Image (tube, rainbow, N blue to C red; front, side, top):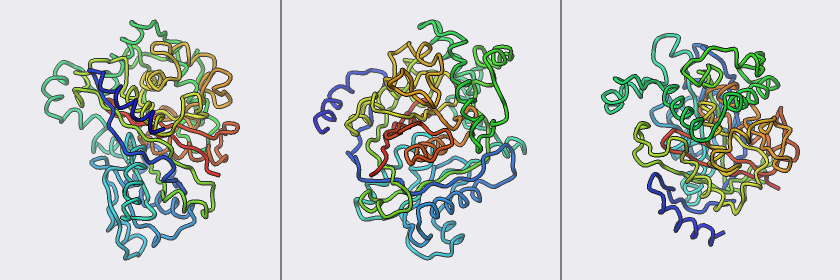
Length: 415
């Protein structure tokens, strides 16, 4: 494994459009021992902080711990209203010191928080760390308090050089990339449809999915009007209220918990040059998974063929398809062909030519909580108690994404 990491370091410098972020080897040092969620809904008038506390409480109970056992807290910075240690102590009535980091939550940090937590545990700063993310954007949009596009509209460079030309909001960015992918590689509308169709099929058999009662077929998809060509609304993520959390500890201490521990084997992070300005990206038909996935796999001493189940950040259908390519599940440009014929369905395996993907429904059909539910779903898959259970799932991968950055997390079922 050490040799593969060294080889990777020498290779990543050859790219002129992005790079890997070097990360310490934390293979098998840390485990996820508890998970917790709220319900996922449309506008609910629930506050993000209240939902976060509910998810944390459920995760602590699932881990077989008490609130006083938690001495580490990780959240996202700048997205909705997240928790702080004082919120935790006030809600649970504890007085203990809590190591605190804003380098957690969801998106890419849902993956990299495991690396940060492992280093904190290694340094003796904490023993049991909870990572939590909550969002109330559905309620915020309904009440006029804002949308996910507001940051893009207010950021000076975007406001000055992208928005005036009509390149706003997010669906237009990724529709541009989708058109280019279709032009370069011949990807068809029917192939692109396979992504939302499969994820909706998973949501239809998942009790926690927002779109569980909404059936979609190829015919109904193609009959839908364009939102921004080539995207229909089904190609775009939901806007949701909800929260998720998971508890981490040293892998050696995880064996005494109520559930089979889920071990972190590898973590990678990649960045595109010119970020965060999407209009400046040099390779619009690729994602930073090009840089993060090889690093995570090298740390885990795994090949992509070892992955039994995948959860990929699917803010848009083409984003999911491109990341599947860039992680190495198929050659670049072959994603359209790869996803055809139920290749992402939860009853498919790598051995029969597919990879079960977003078995809960993803951001497109389960809930838009920016990836925290993706990781929780993988934990359930590796425990063996998922609603759409992949047979004999032993190794899983999460692909996090922010457009200019990506992160990859490799997990395995503990003994």
